[in-house]
Length: 112
Length: 114
Image (cartoon, rainbow over all chains, first blue to last red; front, side, top):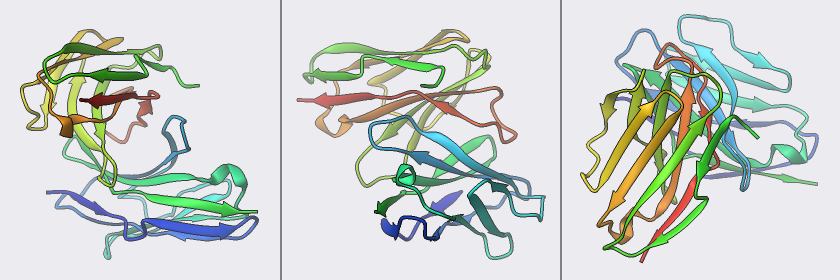
């Protein structure tokens, strides 16, 4: 069975600094996708970034980038130049075998 | 605001009540999903519909009954719920059922079972 583990229930960072959120997963699939979703307080969940497992190059989206280590089954999210609007719950997710499995989430606080 | 809407946003119901949650997507997507989000637990996939046919039922109790009359609408019918069913119920849609498509989420319905 697919599992996704986020070992950091809460993280905080100073505004303009860089923070890394951890995610590990377990899968028997050879072809799959990994995602980071963001859920701001009282707002809808939105996609932050997506990685295809067969691509070795790490995905980047503006200030957001991932460190994808396929052999280690690790998929961390780096947020550079943190902004107040980045405060949210961040969920790591794995898609394989026609199913999307989420981690427990990491609550990120941005300190002004 | 995304193209997925959910009504009602808040619902309080007794254990003997029958109610329905509604989801509508305006994105022309082919797949729709129901998730349950409880405090301190991962998001749990409940049901998946692709082209209006149910393709995934994640061992959800029969007191939850989904309905997908067309590709734009998804319902979750509730009856004889338990207090542990209190949670945020999220609807989502995507262009396809798999292959890395982004899921677009609604705002959720906050359900409280008394």
